[in-house]
Length: 391
Image (cartoon, rainbow, N blue to C red; front, side, top):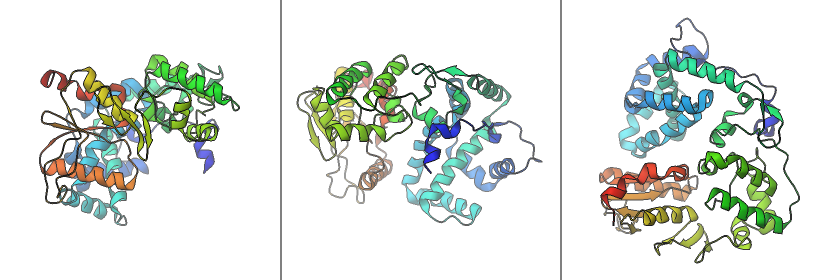
């Protein structure tokens, strides 16, 4: 299993152009192509496409191809993910589509597997229906360009970007100027790591979470492109590997006990910051108490832009999802509730997230959902609030 997570495994692998990205696939095609054609033309495929397709999807696909070329699919999946997951929050409304998926495939029974299948099917159907000759030529050009040998901007070794696994390209937010196999310093002293942590945070201008890594999209998507190479140099000097997403936690835990303790030792944290069971409790510039550094970042953005906000407002009562009336959002701005979903993957937290989304859907509340990957361009989600709710 390990070899699939090491970049050296991919060096001898030949890139194969994904067949589902070829427009006007012949019906006489065989294998996986035939499956996708049958899927797209089936009643189930029609229902999936009709349920989730938006007229702007072709523009979204074109923009992502312009940015990422042949590696665009994982970015598209991330864009589609929230649209689809929001639909499945309401089990009653979504049951018909789950049943149709179960009937189409026959053997799948578990709900989470069915949802994953529908997510993948919608993307494949969209690409079969929307990829045209012009986009296909762009993808072919991208394949040729990314197949050219390139000198790594850090270690100067030659590599081919096309050989990077898609999870590394996506994880690095499309920063393929680095091979991610650069030699790293393994024996830095605590004092030197403290200096490097200060240098890192001065370079990126935010305090990252403990899982900072060049191939963690939640981290990389917040780093400005022009700072990327210098940022990676510092990370590698700390001793964090470019192709091991767990290396940051192991290096920092070994030296300091935790990322929080490393930040404390480096005199990085602002005043009023305490470690808590949920991460880092801190005081934002507004005076609001926040449960994480990311939450403080959002609160500071609202404060800096003079947006009138209420911290932790109560949601309206609901007979199922807010019986006591004690459930709170992270912020309220006018008619909009804002939630930062930063702990995805924890069972209890995911349950609360689902219930909040159902609550908002059932009561037709205006809910703005923010995720870690939104924080690099938070203005895209919140700028419209400035004119409406300016102090």
